[in-house]
Structure formats: structure tokens, C-alpha cells
Amino acid sequence: MSLLELQDVRIGRGAETFVRGVSFALEPGGVVGIVGESGSGKTLTCRAALGILPEGFTVDGRIELDGRDLAGLGPREWTALRGSTISAVFQDPASYLNPSLTIGSQIAEVIQVKLNTKRRIARVRAVELLDAVRLRNPATVAGQYPHELSGGMLQRALIATAIAAEPKILIADEATTALDVTVQAEILALLASLRAETGLALVVVSHDLAVVAQLCEEVLVMRAGEVVEQGPVEQVLHAPRHEYTRLLIDEHESYGLEKYLVSS
Ligand SMILES: Nc1ncnc2c1ncn2[C@@H]1O[C@H](COP(=O)(O)OP(=O)(O)O)[C@@H](O)[C@H]1O
Ligand SMILES: [Mg+2]
Image 1 (spheres, protein in one colour):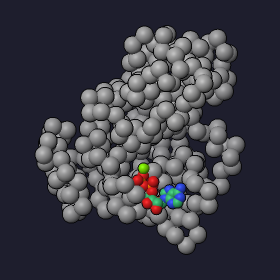
Image 2 (cartoon, rainbow, N blue to C red; image 1 turned 120 degrees about the vertical axis):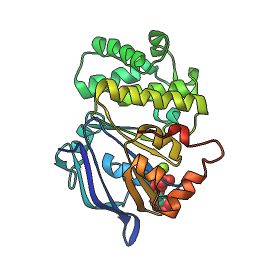
Image 3 (cartoon, rainbow, N blue to C red; image 1 turned 120 degrees about the horizontal axis):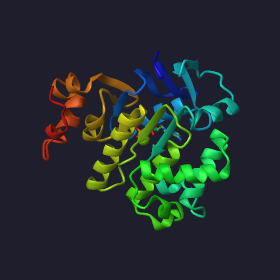
Image 4 (cartoon, rainbow, N blue to C red; image 1 turned 30 degrees about the vertical axis):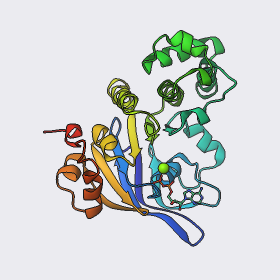
């Protein structure tokens, strides 16, 4: 059974439609990528799966999370699922962390609330998580405030927070977009190793095909709210069927998408 399955999903508000006809299935430990230019509907698709669509937005079609149909879930049921079954990290990690609390206490808070763990144990676990996301001196970082960390460190801390309640799925929506190229590569490597070590399934979303190509097995190419192409990443990259996919590939000609391709 798939962990997350979208069938012919449409997202709209009143008579307006922003996303239509999105279908994919994410298997346990799998990786699905969504690529497309800004405004193509990637984030709305993620928000639908997380139950955090903007006010007035509705979903048609079917979304199943870990065997549960998400239609008609109440706020309390959503709160129970978010964090512990499906979790997410977005661009701009600073805005998702409380500036007046230490990193360690924010992670410990998630563990206490979601896993019903005692504070002392949650504190210890928070440091373990900071170590798991490859932050050097995790005990020191746990005592620091968000403004004391670099962008790359903040994104690692946010990933630690997102996986603190041991979700099965992590959505990374433009999670590396604000970072410089070296740090971006490190974060992508971290996501790959979390997947390998813990079986965490990933949805990787980016406007940058290279980011998606690096991590994913299946890729959806979105344009103006529709999926224009979908398939195994090698197929989409080596034999794109849609002109728009070719455009996304051409953007990388200058420095070479080839290095990201999995040659089989
Ligand atoms: N909060 C919102 N209010 C109104 N329209 C929105 C909102 N979020 C997204 N949209 C509309 O949906 C389209 C797709 O947005 P989004 O999913 O954020 O695109 P992407 O993540 O691919 O850049 C946008 O172009 C916009 O028209
Ligand atoms: Mg977006």
C-alpha cells in the first residue's frame, strides 16, 4: 500500500482552479519529485497533502495518507497526522522557528507534545536529532537561538524539528532554494541519507530540475497547475516528451545536468 496517494487532485477556490489532474503514489521509503516554474501549483499540492491549504481553498479528487482518505478530516485529526505521519520543510527556515526559544527547546517541545514524552527525555532526544542532521556540536546548537545559526544550520535544525515526531513522509518544498550551492548539496545529501537510514519517504519540490533529479525516482513536471509530464527520472531527463521539460533541461546546459543523472 502506498504511503501517500493523490488521484486526480484538483485544488481551487470558488470557480477558480489552481491545480488540476495531479496523481502520484509515494511508496514507503520512496522519493517523488515535483518540478516546475514558480506559480505552477507545487506548493498548493503539498499543502493539500498536509491539510494546510489557504482559507477558502478546496480539494477535489482523492488524497490518501497511510491508507486514510483525507477528505472530511477535522482540525483535530489533521493536527494528529501532521508531524507524526507527514511533515514538511519549506524555504526560509527562520520563519518557521521561534526566535525567542532555543533550538533544543523547540525540538523537545515537538517531541513532548507529539510523542507524549517527558521533558528530560525529549531534551536528550533533541540533541540526538541535531546530531542525526549532521550538525557539529549538537549539544551546543541545542542551547543556541535561531539568530545564532547560519542558513544551512537553520535548515538542518528545521529538518530535525520536522522529523522529531518520526513521520513516515517528509515534504521538502524548495527547502534548499535559499541556500548557496555547496550548502544546498549538503542538505540534499542529508535528505538522501535520512531516507537510506530511516526509511523516510520524501516528496522533493523545486523549481530546479537538478535538485529533483539528484534525489528522485519519479518526477512530475508541473506547468500552470497541470502535470505536463510524469515518469521515472531517467526517462524524463533523457527522453523528455514535453517541450516544457526540454526547456527546464536546457536551463542546465550551461553547467551540466548530466552530473546529476543516474546512469544505469
Ligand atoms: N494563498 C493564496 N492565495 C491566492 N492564490 C494563491 C495562494 N497560493 C497560491 N495561489 C495561486 O496558486 C498558484 C500556484 O501557487 P503555488 O502552488 O504556490 O505555486 P508554486 O509552489 O509552484 O510556485 C499561484 O500562481 C497563485 O495563483
Ligand atoms: Mg512553491
